[in-house]
Length: 332
Length: 250
Image (cartoon, rainbow over the protein chains, first blue to last red):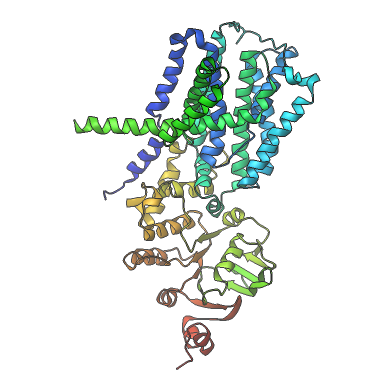
């Protein structure tokens, strides 16, 4: 075994935070998709938003080992907060996204105190209940939320006072891209911070962390609040770009969809949420057009096949592929 | 009388009808080297779990440098100066030893609670963690996933993690347990090189280690302190020989 020097140790710590090829390719490809698929901008915007939502769950599940079955509560709350603001006369988009994030983050913080003190199946129960509670509350307040017909009358002001939200979704796409990218940068920073290291420590061996003097309760509260804030911002983006908020944004199905996106893309990778969202939403779009009645069956089948073939999700499969290519290149 | 580094007063722990710890009063002096021995089931590991807050006592109190700590959580006790290693390695399998130590160092240096602070730019955290890994002879392995390390090397990481918190009281729960003979030498060296200002209470079944290292030995039997004394006194005590060593005192 060769000697490890301090310089090598520093270099290895820095390498962990370096951008991977998959990350770079995804963000370049996402920008290029605007030019390659100009008629699919609405779908591409939904992929970015879905990816952002899945990434928020990844911070909890993939990095902290904290599962959530009710994450749509924060997504939906962010959507309703931004939607209500715009429907009641404040259509400025950027502040609307911050308002959505603040509303969801506040709820996340309030519930985090409970969630941080329970473990395992109890976390699933509590998060599931938060989701169901919010869904029922929104359903029973049609005067505020629009109930089953959804919140309508959302009118957005031009982005930064310059760019009108158009019918083809051009402004919406770049707005979602920029927001998702900035939040991705922030999330990257978080997982590569000492706080992120503590999160990984909890995932690896939860009971050992307190013996390092690290409070797991505080770590979980921070993680849950950050995750809920990002989920809320993703919801706000959806409300602003589609100009409607449906009850479905708070549904259990949406929480599960985010979980599926993560599993397909690769848990604990951040970018996996976006890759999973791209696969899931694109497959849903194609299959629902091909089989308007049975598309769910085919979607399920395709996802099972993907999960079975790609261990560690798409990120895992792509990482193995790039490693193999690198080996072949070295042999030549 | 100066405050002991660690003290328990009439500490009791009951699981249902089973009394595992029964009125244990211990005094570990500052900088002391004290061994806790006793047959299997004597309640030694339970006592360590009570001291670290993993278990809540049924009654009695625990004082760290004169201040009661029995109402504090485990992490709060660690921040007050308590450190511990585990009987069976309890580590972070897919983090490297360097990252594991960095976590403990970052906590001590107040780097937690700042989600946008880049870890790789905190070179003092890396440097300090690397120095600690080197101090226990772990620098060769500090960049490999912990799960790939031999058991004995993982024991060294346990010690490094405990030291990373700069404890004033260190509890070692069978530090040599499960370590192959070939690897135990490094472990012994690391333990003997621990700073003198750190008070150490250790549980050990290896009597060579106990009599070589301890200044005071406490014998625990059925959750109660049977006796306490210097290694010489304990070796001569007929009651210890009968109960613990299984010898009628020939």
